[in-house]
Length: 262
Image 1 (tube, rainbow, N blue to C red):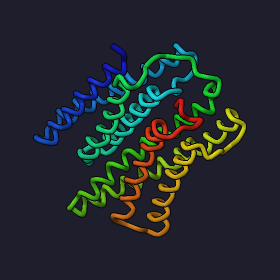
Image 2: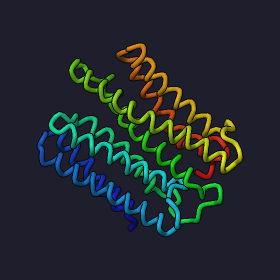
Image 3: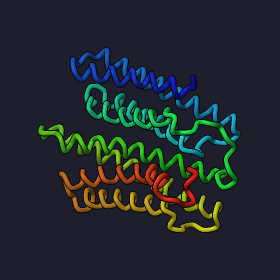
């Protein structure tokens, strides 16, 4: 049994504890869910490190490794949010974001994702790639949190909670946006230059990463410059995250390009 498989079952335990807490609200279940969440993230990072040692390069070169890293970062972000927010932490946000990490880990643990450790091809043997992929997924993990807060904003009827969801959406995107910009756009272009001899080539994944970037740029423009509030900004936030998922999964399986091996 691999570290990621153990992490999957531990995270399932965290999800169950959170569901029970949503039903009967006991602090002990929050504590249990956080312990399980932390253990799951640690195991995923151990898997990440051991694979990196085995292949003698940072293990961010295929779908399985990307899912493991993405899941771990998402769990770390929601764990830190829970710690910092304390009693003010909104349980639906914790549950929703954990569920995204669980879905990513479920896919990584499924038979459709190869888990073999193979040496990366020459185009992937670049630390610009490591910066590109890691920063992009860290940014997207914050976008995952904003996706959840945006959904609950649209579902909420209480104005106080709506404002809290809105604040968290803005804060998450404000943190994730520069990280995603550096990783997906800047470091991605530099890696492309060293790998293929050009900074930009309108490859499908490049194009959809740019579409995603423009979507979150629009969100920040409307919210911070135009001071737009309410449904429009939240809907754009949701669309932006759906674009990240299509860029990650849809392009790999539906569109061919130079990124098809990632």
